[in-house]
Picture 1 (spheres, rainbow, N blue to C red):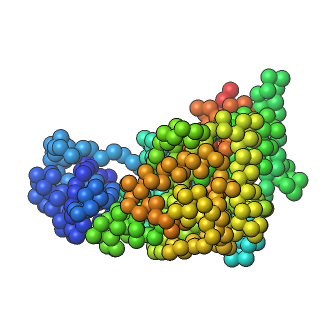
Picture 2: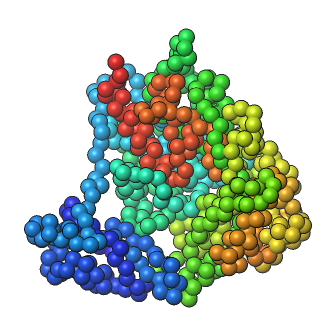
Picture 3: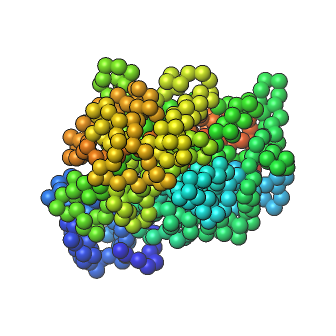
Length: 553
């Protein structure tokens, strides 16, 4: 809205509410009213955040936070004490280190999802020339491989929704917001780098920014070019199958290098492990190598599809369809009361995709996994979301890798229930609640490709998950009228909400028992989503850089 060069903002004005049809002049007037000052005092202003306030559907408003610079320093100090006005924080990013002229080994980053991407970018910007290893292919080739599954039912286990340049977030809604604590404003650094790579500038101001898959592809390519231009090196088709670790008699280890599937050994004493939540073979390798890993909670469930128009009406009322609002989102949580194994469990919406599609997201042969995706426009007919049930290690006893076995079991059941062709099993909500198999599709057309098979989803979900979702659906319908409509479509199975293991690390971001190994991002259990993964990548890159310039004695 407000463009052009901007000096360091001096004051931040918050909770400025304006009607949906306001213009820029109205915002400027509201800023002056808040300050109790004439427009001539404003040297410059810019929107820092814009959100939709839809608590009253009959009077939807935009809520702004605005940063202003005043022409008079004395007025700045005086007006900073007014209600709803405060000094604007300094959110500029500052690098923590600069690479020395000589290093014994360049840092290695394993994985090119959002975490690995930003770890590599920050290390490159600080002059460390990272070596970035990716088991999959460049993003354009990976996109073609992914379409092969969606269009023809042909899966490449090395190149798919989970593996390849850009990580799983490339095929998603591209959400760029998170609920993590971010006192150092690292999320802002992520967003600014995305804008430099071609994202729309509005992601810097939107309360719930998103990009969508097609734009993410181009941005990932541009970020790779930036890293390479700064001396970083990418190697695709470079699957890490082992770590070289020197351990003492007490089990404490030091990274020495990595081994690729080709047999090549790469010497490295600083390795960022940003492998993503589906690198199950790598989890097993870490356990075998004695790296400290532990089982952790995750969730299991389905994707649920409704007409986007239903969600829009419930969220926006008579304003549904207004281009200023776009496709509506939702976030739902239900705590089960129940009487059986579902008692005390939480059912919640996950990775909601307005105006999107349900996609085939498996990375392993003979298994079906679902996820959601949308484009920047969010203009597809259906809304979809994960509808998942939280589970804990007590639900899958048997050791660190038991969660992986649990996921695989239900993914195999979904593959069989879908007919063994990577088609997905589906059930209408009305049938699911009545406990009868679906035999046909109703008014909501499933978006999943390469196809669906109506059936009984109790065949591919644990009994406690079935019971929990049956309890949650009517509760959600009380919040969103029509949510439990008979023809809404549920597609199984959603298992990859997060990694089933955590590669534990200390305050220095290094593995608890393997120095030089930096577990990071979703695959290590320290992030969930594009923005939080990118922030974690920055934190880990900073830790690597500081250790390289000031190694411990």
